[in-house]
Each structure stands twice: as structure tokens, then as C-alpha cells.
Image (cartoon, rainbow, N blue to C red; front, side, top):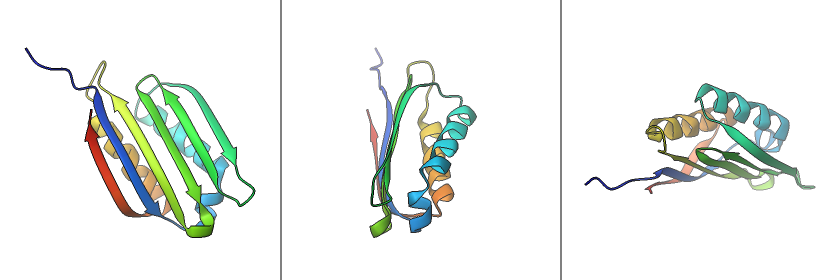
Length: 117
């Protein structure tokens, strides 16, 4: 009997230019576009801008979640995406979404962990 593996969870930290890390509206549009492109299903979201210019965003997906937290004053962001395998293997989609996020922010990866759940 094969054991079930729920999916791939990517946890990362990257550096990026401060203006990109402040632009919550652009990130919201980017995430919406990526969710549609990857054929994922958003079921809710929360976006919050901080006085210092950074923001946090969490998107709940039927496949699990996507989140980012930015600190433009330090040129830093943390990123988290978990895509489950309920109907299909989403590992490639998680990796593509992460790569697109790095490109969108003009980012340089400083750490990345992939966890097979």
C-alpha cells in the first residue's frame, strides 16, 4: 500500500529592492494572476500594510496557502507556499510560483527549504 504524501511546502527568505517590498497592491495583483495561471483556487485572503512600509499577505487556497511578509527597511522578505496533492501533484506548481515570485520582486534567494509533507 502506498502512503499518502500531502504535498510540497516551500519556505524561503529573499532580499529585494525596497520599492518592490512596499508595493502591496502590485503583489496582490501578482498573486491573483499566479493563482489563476497555476489553476489554483483562492478561498480567502488577508493583506495588511504596516506604517514602516512593509506588508504581510496570506492567501488561503483549497490546495493550502501562500504567504509573504516584507521588511523593506531591511530589503528582506519571507515567503511560504504549501500546495497539497489532493487531486494532483502540485510540486511543480509550488516551485513555479516561487520562481515567479523571485522574478516579480527582482529578488535574490538567501535561504530556501522544501519540505515534502
